[in-house]
Length: 487
Ligand code: SAH
Ligand code: SF4
Ligand code: F3S
Image 1 (cartoon, rainbow, N blue to C red):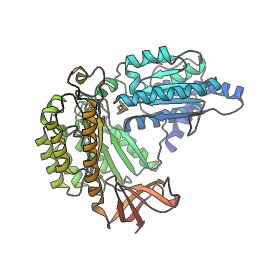
Image 2 (image 1 turned 120 degrees about the vertical axis):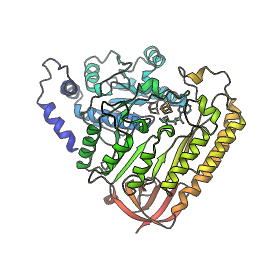
Image 3 (image 1 turned 90 degrees about the vertical axis):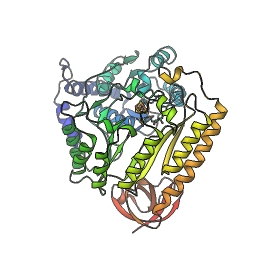
Image 4 (image 1 turned 180 degrees about the vertical axis):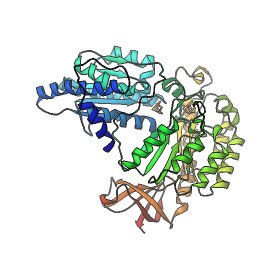
């Protein structure tokens, strides 16, 4: 990638034997040079290049962080591979629900068998799960074959930590920070897609929804300076990106704590004005902070700002919402939806819903179903409540019995799927623009892309279309995707 060439020039001019500089990001450039030297020694011993694999769990934030991790590892000299049978495997973990943790522990077992056969292999763990003390304690005690552990606040330090791990392969390098005020940018990135990219506009979360662990593992909310964000997007556009997704746990509270406060709507409007950029998306929007100004900006740039809002509901019961500390009610949520639809009648709405929050009654659950029926989401992620230690909800003793939760979950799923199918199909027969992402995984004669509202479309085509926006006739909707033909 063009942007990484500039880093290469600086890094190759550094002396890895000189003392480490203090200032970031130069300190990391120095450690890239240093780790590169250590890696070259291992390569010489093994007589080949070394490979790495980063496995990502969790949300878009983690996906973006993994692109940064990969960028640094490639700059050090590791070669990316698509299998965990690699010389270095790094798990970028999630802990939002218990099953995310269980998966990591399970897969670590598999990695251990591989490592026994390949003693030079290195295993690293990072991300949200590592910010929990009990996790690090368990790994120190039961997974002693892990080489490297770091958290969410020091991802930018990967080169420094890798350098240490390469020089001390028999030790477990652990570096967890409880918080940071630093936002170290200007490091190499390896994007998954050449033509689209996530862009962090803020980090952390201040909302403390009663069930949620994110504020504890990602720290307090910090917004990036608008000029830094705009410059990054301009660089991405120069490097071939035509779609960006602005990322934050609650983008609607963006900019409030900056020295010169800027609203998310103002930021979004500036991004929409960037030449060469074709589409802007964002997530996630907390309903409590969604402003009229934002709705107006979205309606003003219908061809550039994607007509899609992910508006997590969590529950339709005002009583539970209050308990969850969501700071909106069923009524205010529905009013907001009306306002959005009045300004953008065709917009696609999607959501997240939790079933089985402590104390949830059948009446509460009925209210959730009622909101789903009224709003008619294009799609909804439905989750079974998972107790996260350290959150206020974990201390509540009226947990809903498992069989009741499962029954409610199935009823909800059926409803969201039925409505989702009908909603998704509303464009059948029309011609829409599709950004082609890849060759279809099942049928190599088809390509797969997304409409501006995020709906998936498959149509006959070849690799030359990847990264292009193509007009496609939506012939037939099959549940959650369309089959089409180039118009
Ligand atoms: N910042 C986003 C959500 C990030 S977490 C927002 O506020 O909308 C993504 C989703 O995971 C949440 O919307 C919620 O539905 C779900 N989630 C979070 N904690 C959970 C828990 N303890 N159990 C089940 N689902 C949970
Ligand atoms: Fe979690 Fe709530 Fe923050 Fe979303 S807004 S990350 S649900 S605490
Ligand atoms: Fe998971 Fe962390 Fe995202 S806990 S949902 S990866 S912010």
